Image (cartoon, rainbow, N blue to C red; front, top):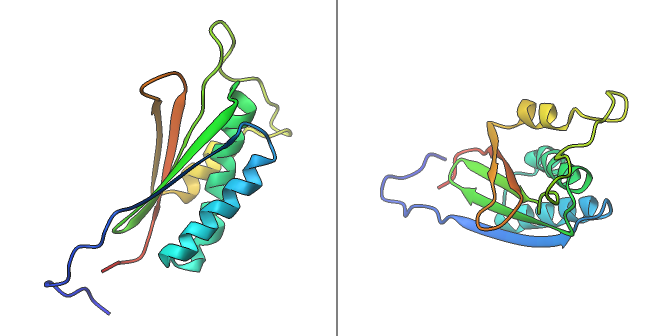
Length: 142
């Protein structure tokens, strides 16, 4: 059904959560995101893609930083779902990323790039760390 010109603009919805910076938080993050997408009425066909993106972004935050906690925020705006993950960075003097062999991993952001309509990263403000985000295209919403 096409959108009517006199329809009110859809609301921007946000949902955020914080989890410990541990590997077992990755599955919990996927569950929280899927639950929120269900509540918002997002098409179930996007659940697997959102789970993949959330898994990769959370895994990177847990494996490549010294974060005690990882923050996630979802934005559901007309035409897109944005997943943003914020880490706490590494202590000064420590390398930002540890080396990973191709067999061990290292393809996470390539996957995010392949399934997202856009993605990027920026320094967290205020404070240390980075925010890595990805956007998934949604169908028309009215």
